[in-house]
Length: 256
Image: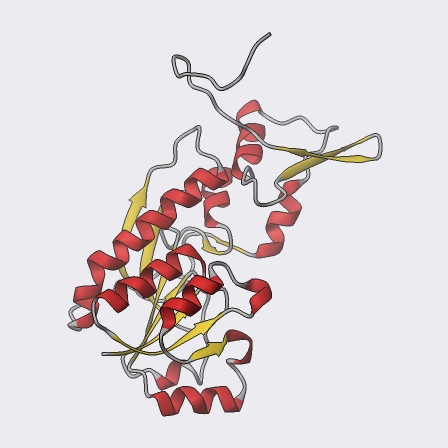
């Protein structure tokens, strides 16, 4: 089976490494441009095949390059670009996508955040790609527990690991053409865009929040690599993070 891989991030790297270890024929790897890459150097090193810049996927020259490479199927893992025709039309076996959400909940951006904020089920899904955003037929899913003391970061790490495990468990059926397809109800579930997180981030000091809701807003956005929740006080912008310590566990906090 000849594959075109659309990869980014740690999970994308693990999927690419898995396919390589299985001896699959990787026609090419499509990567984010440098400014948007995560684990870019590692993915490039693992590619061992032509690399295509994702920002050019709609250009005729790029489409012609993919056509000449003749991939049979696309594998998308944590890839941040929406795949459209005519690229999808070049793949006779279609394209499958690994999404860190329990579809139809949390289509689109930041599913780890929204599972905490909205209380929607968390999980991972392998599905076929259509021209919508995470709306294609479902191949396989796994639910992931979201604990009250999970943060955006800890839930994200759970989803990453579960995504890779789901892909490895499901790939043999995909390869043999023995997948089942479960159609999604496009009117069901939830969907979120990147800009929604920007509006969520500000905590209004003049507003009353239920304690649980405020905790959810802060912990959902606790991911030290990113800005997180914040509020304004006397002209200053103050960022918020939360950490949890369960009674009976050793504490790293020193006391005088």
